Image 1 (tube, rainbow over the protein chains, first blue to last red):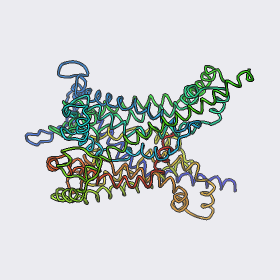
Image 2: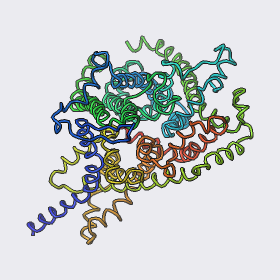
Image 3: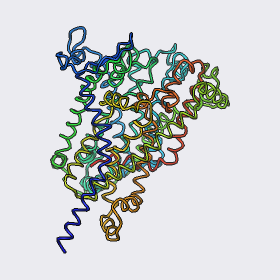
Image 4: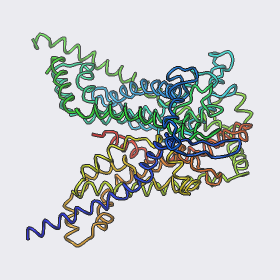
Length: 338
Length: 295
């Protein structure tokens, strides 16, 4: 009897494979295989002769006896002969600049709002309405938002120029989207504007997840709001903040819709200073001589950077509990109220 | 010590309640400002869509006018020269609905497989799903593009719909929810009653997961509806274009002459989502809060 029962459970458990199978089949075909294919193409000659509309390749460089890394030198070394002085790394630089300019104010504002919304002493009414409005841009179509800002900052008749000139802040309309700093700033602002509500809600949930007794204990012991924030909230919020950071960094590296649709030509005006790495990869692959091989090699670089960031996350998350405990002990000792 | 401090403490508390009021006013002021900041672009868009091109070029106003229908008619006429505006919307709807159904159903199924069954390698399977969650689709763009066109799926909706079946983030959310909402005893009870495994899943587990399914449906739909990156690479025939691709078209020469038309077009693409958001915002925000705390 016992034997039979045991056999039956094993039988049931085998069903698990059928349930996870569709996921893995589709993953293998539509995600893993394209990824490996991209890796392969990075070592192939593959482009299109635009003049004769002739597709060349993909042929493996090794099969022709050429250096299999033929696609890579152009990615790392520029025409000037300097390392990293290439369009690829300029695009990566643009992406990072615009991501940092959006993330720092985003996390600071989100943290501030999250602390305000969860403050039990200064209770905020109408929180639901605030959250709703603050989060709203996040679910809107990035394409529409980008074109909307393109119109808002239009020269010379865009609403922003009209407002600034009528208020006397500007004497003449300003060509925002022809200026490097302004365009990058607008892209960073749109990202900030779309995402701070999301980050705020995540951080709010994180703070609400901290045991209230910790806050009470701190307050009973006479800790000020600032002390509580620094010694209780912040250390315990750390895992979530690391997660938010990495998520935002990975998402930021893939930035595409907004810079693509914000500028006049769609190729990172002015002078490619707002062209992100994903835009550049697609420019390589789908315009001009359609250099798929080179684009795949650039994708590899992007993949490597993404991987480094992900591994950093795993490093942080691995010792999560140990870090938490150490921090709490340290905070308790430092705060002097425990 | 505490007795000596009593009057000082009382004074402190009194100033504290004053502080609280001041803090409250200040904080609400900042929040109202932020709300204004978030609404302003949308409001400017809606107002300008109701004004004529000449009015828009002359000055800025926060008060709507009455040219919306005219702008909208012109927009339809301009767009319909090639492909009807409604067609773009229909295309987007077909893709988003199919992708949402597949994504949520199969993600629930995958989560069920991981939660209910203790088959060999289940921990490995789960670790794998967690691991691939962080790989962005954009890094394999080139291979995806080439593969899709090689197998003859270029310029079709299949590559936009089928990959939705493998959505690690949705699986993750479903597993979290399932662990607390689906008692395994119920699965056992169904087995005793002779229900087969897939029937148990479809008729017992899925209905019990309704709240999570609803939340993930919203997110999957919005994600697919807003997607510009993949469709703009896969779809080459204008008849198959989606709404975000139409937004890109609006920046082109044909629409540049008339300012009102573009704003009307933007309104058309954004207002449906805005209305849905106003109705469902509570669930959406709760979903974000749940999904964000990934521990």
